[in-house]
Image (tube, rainbow, N blue to C red; front, side):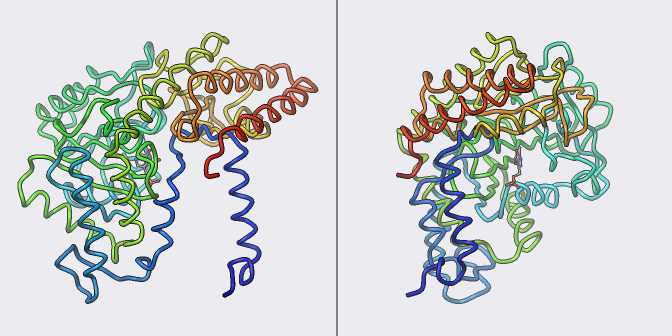
Length: 419
Ligand code: PLP
């Protein structure tokens, strides 16, 4: 039979090069991870061929008995994982899970409060360029400029004045615990629904390594591919809500914003949730946090500033605003040394989101490939070596880049991702 290389050599070669890149580069993008071979394998199954609009047992198409098994397993495992009683596993991605919550629980024009994108929030929490910012009246909250921590007093003041329909908790670039109970109290006082988007920390929450929002939030959304280490996708969860509330969420996903669910991805979610229920997953998440702390300590010892002074989760934001180069420069210099990060705005960043004055790094991917504290300390040291050299400029950077890249590849080869 014909292989992909026979029928589409260009794409086969691109995949092969990407495999090599993932093996030989150190992945510090905080939202990325390596799914298991089993999670990847089931996405390559015949489930991809099946239309299954509707929900298990209530489909609009025949022949759904086997994909129903997959969706029911995904739902049940997910409810066990997060100790909750409602789960929807159909959102194609995190953004779709969030769109469904907006559709279910607010009307266009309603006031909604979310964390400012420039201070750690996500696009779908009300950025003007996103559907959320276009169709809803967004009132952002943010950080205390002195501490880099969320300013709950200001949040409360804004909420009591704006009376939002929903208060969104959750972030893409914040390295501390959130006080879910405090946020729920603020939402209650303001008469708002409290919605938590735990996309970044879902794996940590599942393992008990980050405060659990489910006892506090009316509704929780997440991606499945970050710390949770599943396939790319989204989920919606709730605990203790009435049937009508849950039905609104289901019908917002389908038929509200989606057509046929991606049954091969839902099956892969089921596999990932089973993996996450194993004791090894808890140990993995514990190591993710330990590794992040170890990296933060080295970076701070080397004289670099971390927003909020450190990390309690899997990520941190390095503030480069006092340096003579930008977040974009730092990202590019590290990429040349085969360390992958992303430029990121820091609080009150004077530069645009395309340039920025910060770098976001995280440990989920390197921990999956087996890096412990010692390896992460080395990586943090190399990262600082590159940033130091970037500041010196010229030949220093070229030499350092070669030196670091060699060590990066050697370390990666000792910790293969898939082989
Ligand atoms: N919510 C948060 C907090 C995120 O960080 C992200 C992705 O970075 C998303 C939602 C969106 O997820 P997706 O990229 O799967 O649409």
